[in-house]
Length: 88
Image (cartoon, rainbow, N blue to C red; front, side):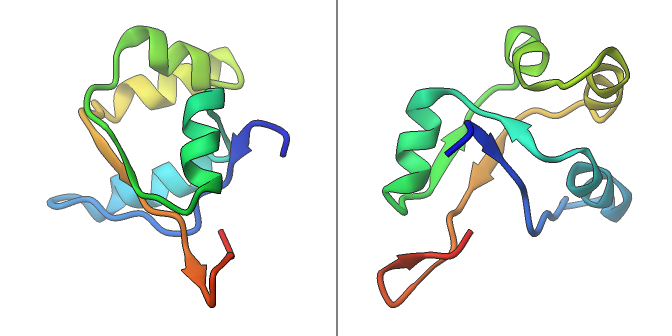
């Protein structure tokens, strides 16, 4: 409801430390369009992490620096749905 998304799980194909860092950086500020997709229970892809996207989702300068250091390229966001209820 507040335009922020708190990740509950993360994985990285080669570096588990990056996944742990991603979880520690949350919650993330998300756009209205992504919030709507999330509430619908549909998975969505962030194809490219642009500088604008990183800056828009960061909560501080230190947070932005941490996000940049991860060298993120893309992300798959999958809402957790059970019995037609959005759990997270």
